[in-house]
Each structure stands twice: as structure tokens, then as C-alpha cells.
Image 1 (cartoon, helix red, strand yellow):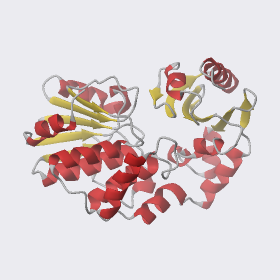
Image 2: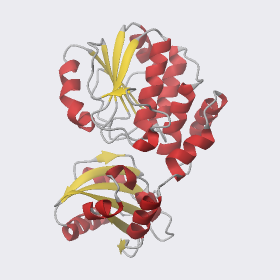
Image 3: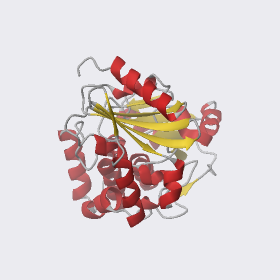
Image 4: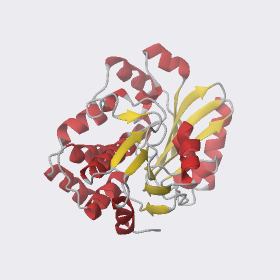
Length: 322
């Protein structure tokens, strides 16, 4: 693995860069991408941020239309991925990144333990959020953490740490957050917009989902389900399901919470959360996914009951400490 100083020296020599964020973008990949974009601009490096899909509406208070493109327009010197555990997480932009990798410098800035170090230059440090890594890179670049840079960094730190409530939050997380807060980050607004605010319809959907939780393995595993018909009933989109998986961990007997989102018939996006006794990165890898020890995801195929059986068995296989 490279040092952030080595990566900073590479970036300082570049004239242009494209910053890639992962599919189904969350606050950490968007915050990482936008903060790094602003930092590169301060350094006089032309750049743009790209994402294959639509940016969730809840981030519109910080990210205006046009700030993130769907395809690169720059023939850049450097391609950078942020908060992207594998090239496949780039979605439709994966072939674009791979094609560029043959002739461009590539940089991988991430915090997922499952990251295979796929770029020429890699910095992967497991932390509560990738924005903490980006903040450290900004120090190496000599860019101050202030203004909207501070807001973007705080966006990633708040959302990926569950509002600083996850068990991987430590002193380094809080010291990074303090730097962003000192730089002017609007902590109250960012927390409200990303962690608290919801529509009446979304609240109704949430209530219906959590009222139908299913428990397995002597109540240590809980599974929630959001179907396509439920999204349609409440006029919601998949982005509105974020955070549902965390509710399961509030139940005192639960060690692992899994949220299933129906993508189409026989196909589910699974999000895993753990209190610490089960490594859900290893569970997700059973299905070709991955992520963190305490938070991971994957796709699972089959009818709903079959999927529940697969999850129950996979968690049981990795539940030696339960």
C-alpha cells in the first residue's frame, strides 16, 4: 500500500483528474468525491466527479444538479476512485475506469477491509468513513479544511458512522470531525438532512417494514424486507430504504441485522449490519459481496424464503461467538 504523501506527490504533478464515485451513491462516496474535487481545484488541477446514476434527493442541499457528471468529459491524467471497495462497484463506469487504467495513473482511496488494491496507487485504511482518509490526504496536499470542503467531509463522516454511533467510531473519527467542524461544517443541518428528515409517506413505509421483522437463530438474526410493491404503495424509491437495516440492531437480543430490498423478482440487494460478534464482511463474501466487518452488502438470488434460508445459514456459519 502507498502512503498518502506518495499519492499527494502524484496528484500534485497532474494537470487533470476524474474522480469516480460508487454506484447507488451514499454520503461517504459523494462527500469524499466532492471534497477531493474542491481540494484539487485549490491545487490548480482541473477535475470532475462522476457517478453512473442519479444522486439521491436527500443530498441536494449540498450537491446541486450538474456538480456530478454521468460520464467523464476530461481526458484526464489521473483516474481516482473514492470509497469504492472494488471496480465492479462503479457500475456502468467500470469499463470506463478499466479502459483508462491501461494508459492513465489510477488511484484508489478507500476504507473497506475487502478492497483488493486494484489501482496503481492504493491507500486503504479501515476507518469509520472514507472522508477521514480524504481529510488526511488534504493535509498532505496542503489544502485547508474549510468552507464547503468541511461540509462535504462532514457529510461522509456523519452518514457512514450513523451519526457517530457505530462501534468503529474512535478518537481519530472525532478528531477528524472536529477539524471539519472548526472549518465551518454545518453539523446540525447535515445531521438533520441525512439522518432525521423524512416524508410522511416514507415514515409510513418504514413503520410497515419494521412491523414485519423476522427473527432467526434464537432471535440473534433479524431480517427486514422492502418489496417493489411496498415502494410503489408509498411512492418511494430504493434510496428511501437507507437506514432501515440499522433499526434491527436497536433490538437488544439481535447481533446481526439484514435488510432485503427487492430489485426484481428473485433478486434482492442485501445490507448487513453487526454489533461485532459476527464479521458480516465474511458473510457477504459468501454471496460475492463484501464491505466492512460491521457493515457489508451483496446481491442474493432466489425466492424470498430461499433467500432467508441462505442468509440464516451463512450467518450461522460465521457465528462462532454467538
